[in-house]
Length: 158
Image (cartoon, rainbow, N blue to C red):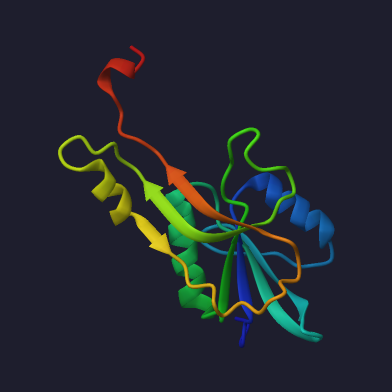
């Protein structure tokens, strides 16, 4: 097991994993309960740091489980979740790097109490004050939404 891991980068989608593997063909993938992973070095401020890339699988359950696995197994100083969401056409250009400042996970349509309270309950503000400016790449600071919804019986195909 790698020691002193600088970071773990989680990758969900199969296409993103295949593109990464094509960029790093010499690495030796290992197996985990969640998918393949490998270690490589990445230059951080001119110093080669060990970084683990883990293909954790799609969906919130796989993302949560593989995140917990990575944290417990490698205890990285930094965890990066790469490319885990789609988007709405015309809202973000392909290739844009998002720096998420606030997340909102909303898995229900609140019909019994205040829906705004439910939204706020699932919101998380991220402290990014530790990032040094200027950032190495241009970014767009954004809110990240992850939204599912309850099934409405009338909409279920029969």
